[in-house]
Image (cartoon, rainbow, N blue to C red; front, top):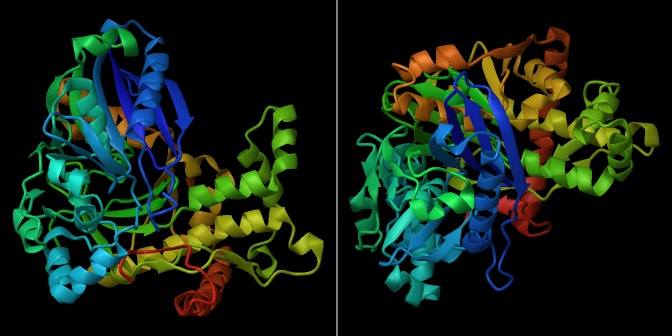
Length: 517
């Protein structure tokens, strides 16, 4: 049987996932990684390309032991968007940052002051603002790291960098390349006009290939080290949210996907670019060439859950070990008995998305009761589940304001979709059915689907989706709970506005804010 290897470089971890010819994953190897702030550079989030490449190789080596290497037909990669790696003329890494690196606040302010309409023009062309774009970071390098800036020769997104390390080919794809903000959505290629307008006239932009393009073969010098064969084809991948949409079968206009990982993305497929968009939402190229996606993001709910587990759930971790259960599963079982609304607890973490002025209040829990039964860590845990769903609802309503469309059902994928309680809460809050695919590694599956289609295992991507994507369950909303959550949503929005003002005034510290705000 043929096998397809998908590499998924997420914000919080790296995964190597091996799929068979029927779309079933036969082996997953996952290792957490962390992107550390340079204490001398506020807002920085460095990507350690040396240590992380060693981790990538270890994962590939371990997963490839599962089958004979000659049967692994392809390898491809997906990754967090926005993060990128810079190479010199010899192809050596110079510098890299992860996705929400926010070091370039001064550069953003200067761009806005120098060209007052520039960010709006960038948005009209690229669907991006300066919040997560590459331009301000590159200009930061010009000022603070001129030796690196003057030596840079090529910019690769993180998944492109992984494929480059495997086969030596420098390239990118529209679904991740577009998140740099130096891209034309209409042309699905680089926009040198945007780069030049910012004052960066150097061409550091690689060739663009659509996801699912064969770009080379695994280099023979690597084969023994990572357990792959030199006949294994290397296939261009894409941004994690976009290929995750393919992995759950969202390949048609109007399909709506919620990807629940370190960040939660909400994606609505469109077959034509909207004629006018306010910069409240993001617009990306989909990983299939005939679609684009309107996107909103809930900030770091997966990372918040990991923080909560590590901080407050030590006893549950011990209990889960004894019961041979996942600690999150155990926490859900306990949180199931907490009523809707979590006794009035109001978590303040991610705000509803406002792309042009993207910032979040200081993390906190409000309205705690002095009754320990109504404010213990299980209650707080459920409140986080509810809060992420409320923020997701707010984001979908924001998309509705832009394109006059609210979904009649949504697809929920990613690690968060493993939680049955979270799935039901999401359905109750959104007020529409929530479909959960059988395969939770949606980004990896989408990457493998593109690869299998690229080598002729399927006639079309739609055929591949029809054959590989299976459904586990559909969660139907509880109408009574939905009505309660709509009242809670208004309460949360009011409370959040006050907390955001406190952070804006400097009384508290923003959880995150875009550079230049």
